[in-house]
Amino acid sequence: MKIAAIQHCAGSDWHGNLVGMAEQIDVAVDAGAALVVLPENFACYGGDYRALAVDEAPLLPQWLQQQSRHHGVWILAGSVPLATRPDGSPVPAPRVRTATLVYSPDGECVSRYDKLHLFDVDVGDAQGRYQESDLFEPGDAVVLTNIGGLQVGLMICYDLRFPLLAQRLRDRGAELLVYPSAFTALTGRAHWEALLRARAIENGCFVLGANQCGQHQCGPDSAPRHSYGHSMLLDPWGGIVAALSDQPGILMAELDLALIQNTRRRLPLQQHQRLTITLPDDLRDL
Image (tube, rainbow, N blue to C red; front, side, top):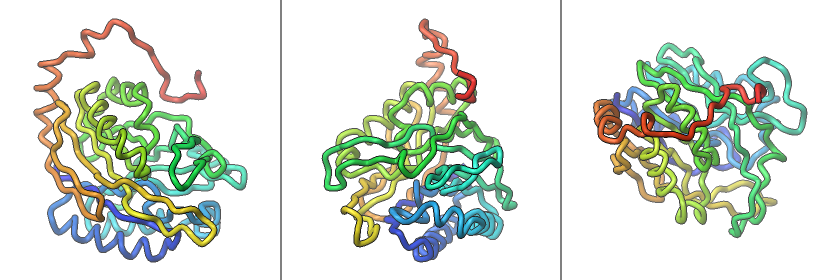
């Protein structure tokens, strides 16, 4: 399967973001992509997520449905603000869920993953304190999805730092682990490639990090925010298959699934692992 990851610099203008993203999807499809991956917060970065999720509730799902159906491709939409939980119950204001949505070539939404781990940290950059839990309600389910016969584990950005989640997805059969992200420039320089390599090597999976890049225009009252870029695809041995710089672009790569079995045969980590932890797929069962 040929995959594309779109790296761009979103701001708070969701309309302008979608116009630019549609142009990039056109380019990726023309280059032969069967799966197009969009980064975290691809449609709106630093805006009013609650207003977008409530006042424009059908906008992003309908746009994604139209894009996937028009092009006849799979679209994995990094994160979308949603005012309801997967069971349909409302998320109390002012928060929303931030979710990955997967659309099939016929425009059907086949999977939803709500971000489990929220970025409540102070990394020491110009932004100062990040407090995602003020904006988002955390999800509670582990999600593996089938994309054209490819088993894909869904995660978002900060989830990259929690290896047990990736391991659970690998144990369920994941072949590709996907991290749509908006990794900061400061943490990206220090950790981005190392973490992606670690998840690939530990699990014998392909790993895709689809990142935002550049300085985001988030409004006059917001501190400057820079994302690292450097989207990349790692093979199960930890080698870089394809990578971008810190500028907007499209990563294109073909997945050679034979590498998964070859790597796991050489390094049978699952069989050798002696200390195991069995985790439920629904964290409400803990």
